[in-house]
Length: 247
Image 1: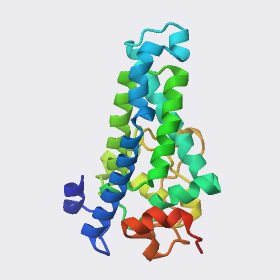
Image 2: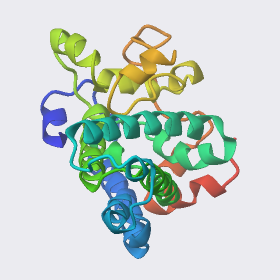
Image 3: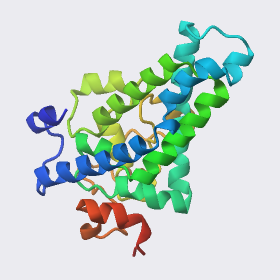
């Protein structure tokens, strides 16, 4: 995706692309390291352990864990939950401080999909793990969802412009880069739209879909108005950003 966005960019970079990607990769790596320190909470690990424990609704109903219907339903439901988690992180002022690190990126690219504060990554994993145990989601479904979530996140953050015909087709099912780019606008009306990561149906169903940004132009400003540029660059600044008083 990084190679593709440099070949077919939707927007021209205005800064140091190498440093931008490095900052995002380092922040993503810090979250991965944190999860490695507490592997017991990993959703996939718990799903595998749960084959012995058999906790959750699917086990209570004695549903076959290898059922294709159960696996597909679980993947779709997890995507539905991530959509609402994303909305809540925007509306809760404390969680927004963490999520704001992701939105303070002013040069959206494939590496932006990794730009999440380690504490947000930890909270997200705790939520997914609770869902896995509460619902008895099969291990295969959890692994498939993690692959799908990460692949879609990288795709819809990538700085590419799809051909108009492909864009119209893809948007009916999945979140595209131009659709998600609107969500990263500094305009609050736009940033409170298009919350989906994978399936675009949730935004359409729950009145948060916007086909175009509110200004109707492509060159809108991305980022967060109250975050200074110096606070949105560099690993140390990104890690400490949620704990500093913003304008």
